[in-house]
Length: 111
Length: 115
Image (tube, rainbow over all chains, first blue to last red; front, side, top):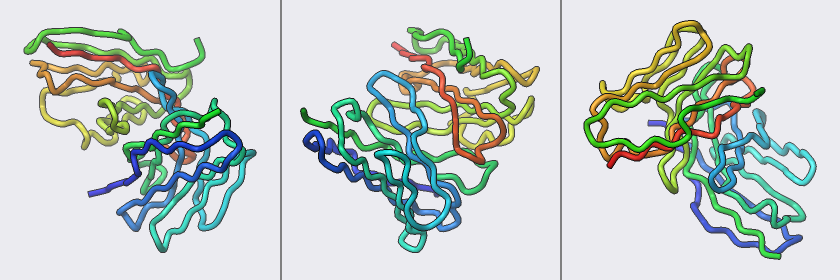
């Protein structure tokens, strides 16, 4: 059974700090990894994807992947109150298989 | 509009009734997905269409759930003999092709409440 695990939070960080969100997955054959952001009452939107081991940076966001440890993380630098949302980790076995989502981690950035 | 459109946005029904939820994907997107999301949970996969055919329906919980996409565009999720446990937000998403980039474009969802 494919599982994606996330700490549900809430994770509270002060404005300007680094928020670190973590995710583990059970299927060692997973190939693609995604972070979606979901504001309360809204639908998920993609913020980053990563395929290879290592770091991938996009603005204030950095995704980190360690396939040996089956671990993927998202770092948000200079956190802003507008970053307060639920962050969903999603994993895909291949390009034609549906994404499997974790429960999400609720992030609260305190001004 | 340019996004994924779902109707109705809210549906309240009684236990045992039949419900249809509609999804109109982004024009030109061949892949269409149905997920459902309960409070405090992540989206749970139901079914995936590539064109008109269901490429993967392994997430449908039982035979009360059925989905169609007859012309490869609009899709309808059909739920027979609704139960209180079916209450959730039903999310539709589309992508240009498969999930190669993982960029699923989600609609705003249809909130189903079964009394």
